[in-house]
Length: 173
Length: 121
Image (tube, rainbow over all chains, first blue to last red; front, side, top):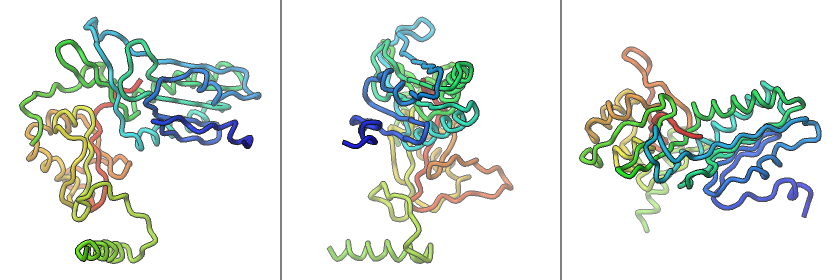
C-alpha cells in the first residue's frame, strides 16, 4: 500500500465526494463519523480544529416528528459544497475544511451534517465553521422531509416554514 | 437491429451537424427518449406535485415557455412550486428571462432541474 492510499482510503459505498488540496466534501447514505472528518483537516500547521454536528430534532414547533428523510440533487450539491469550501478556505486562510451531509432516512438524534475546519489560530476556525453552516443552509441542494403522525412536509430553510402543502388530487398528470 | 444502427448513425450525424466536430463533450443522455427531448428533474415539493422525479419533454423549448408547458401538465404548479423555485440547466443556475430580455433555449439532451427552497443541515 502506498502512502497516498493510507492518507486517502477509498470512500465507503453510498458516498459521493470531491477531494481537493485542503478540501473534502461528500454526500453519503451512511451514518456520519466525527473522527474521520477531523482527520480530513488535521494538519501539523494547525493550532485548532473546530467541528460542528447538526442533529435531527424530534419536533417542529413542538409537533412530534416521527422520521426525517433527506434527498439531494447530488452532482449539483457536490459542486455547491465544493465552492462553499473553496471560498472559505481562501477567505479565512484555513489549513483544511471538510463538509459531509447525510442523505436518506436519518433516525432522530443522529447527525445529518458534519463540518470540520482547521486553521493556524482558533479565531479563523470558529468564524469559518459558522459561515460554512450558514452557507449550506442557504444554498446546498438538499431537501428535508419531516414525517408527522398526520402526514409529511418538505421543509424550507429560507423562511423556517414548511414547504407548500401538496393536495393529493393534484398529483400526476 | 437495422433500426438501431440507423439511430446510432443519426445520433452522430446530429452531433456533427450541430457542433462541426465529434470531439466536443455532449451532455450524458440520461433518458432513453433522448432524441428531440430534454430531461427535467423534480425535487422535494416539485416531486410531490408532479408525482415524478424525472421525465422527458420535447426540445428545443424556450426557457420562458417552460412555466406554461409545466402548468399545462400540472395545473397549479406555477403558484404552488415554480413561483418560489430556481431553475438549473446542465448544473448551472439560469434566470428565467422577463419580457423583452434575451431568451434561453433549452436544447435536446439538456438536463433541466426545478430547485425548490433548500433545507439542508
